[in-house]
Image (cartoon, rainbow, N blue to C red):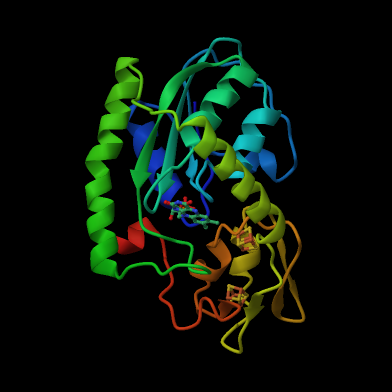
Length: 251
Ligand SMILES: Cc1cc2nc3c(=O)[nH]c(=O)nc-3n(C[C@H](O)[C@H](O)[C@H](O)COP(=O)(O)O)c2cc1C
Ligand code: SF4
Ligand code: SF4
């Protein structure tokens, strides 16, 4: 089974390609997480989990989904992390998850994809993003071949000091910086409701023809990047920056 979490489409793109190559379907985990389900899976085949790297490790929406789900003991688990430059401590995090859930760790691979965190950084222009995605295609293919062959993905564990420090920074960031108070809609907003529909955590409601952000946000950047009018800003951090419209729009 291939599961993915994706804010702006990179991880969905990667998961769908791997799933197609190995003859499976890619399943969006928000199907379960939106209703806080704790699913029980009976399939004894291979499991693959694909998500973005947020602050140097697999996105928490994915790790919490895996923690809450039940899998048959001993099933093989692969992990694929999309990132702008590095998956960070994802090898340690995914190994720990396998130990917790009684799954066989089959490795983790990173796939470098375009930057989407426009609240802090800047996504490249279409040509550069297209180059990044095209360079990712053979990496994705190799991952699929490895999974098909039943081999393990290379994954180097990060040293314990770096692991502990990164975990601490990450905890602080999730707690104190993944907030929504800096999001706002400008007068360009046409009240189409797309931001509310696509938020993977159902954190946006339309109130008086404007989006209103709740507190359950993971900074996935779907709303701000995918607004058809580029009407959403994040403080001053996003002003004047290009939006990342997803891999298909950048190929
Ligand atoms: C909150 C947040 C944190 C991020 N942290 C990292 C990071 O630590 N390292 C990195 O290389 N990319 C980081 N990125 C970039 C994303 O991992 C990358 O663009 C990813 O492919 C987005 O996947 P998606 O389109 O499936 O959401 C971050 C993006 C966001 C939104
Ligand atoms: S997607 Fe953009 S235009 Fe549509 S409601 Fe949200 S902010 Fe307004
Ligand atoms: S509010 Fe925006 S950034 Fe936060 S989880 Fe929803 S779509 Fe992602």
